[in-house]
Length: 214
Image 1 (cartoon, helix red, strand yellow):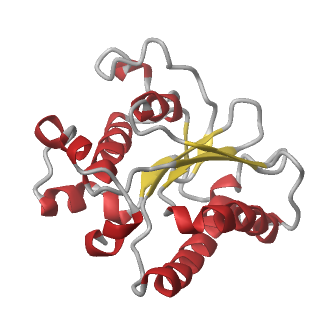
Image 2: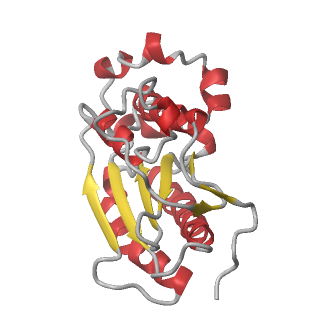
């Protein structure tokens, strides 16, 4: 059986991680590497106590693969960019994972993601891993969707009335962003969401500028 998370549990998502996820979507576009893949991973039933452990294993597999393959394809290892949230509305943990995958690695990522889940929990069912493309012009709706388990005290502040819904108890960390999209990374880059979040529209993402940005 996977390791049980001992960090305690939460019943909702707090304001700061929710804000961090929304700003991370904007920052990724600012870096011309938008979060362009939305992956939903359903873990084992009754996975309440160890869903976080399983998803951490998946992310570790992803980072190893992304480091190796991006270096092979682009001549330099790219930094992974993603956000995630864990939800448990019915006793079965699932992960909302939104990640940047360059076009040349898209097909391989879809195949590998199933293998990573299988290695993490010992098996993978037909509908355990689902992936769809994200439209950067409407991705803030997705950002609000994956933070819909937010604490009711912040629903108004985050303009979440159309999204907020109880998402059950999660043991361990409930949501997060890759270090490349973190608050510290945004501060170091001088990125101010209200001022800079729309500048990406003049600098569309493409394979030609990925290496320089990373």
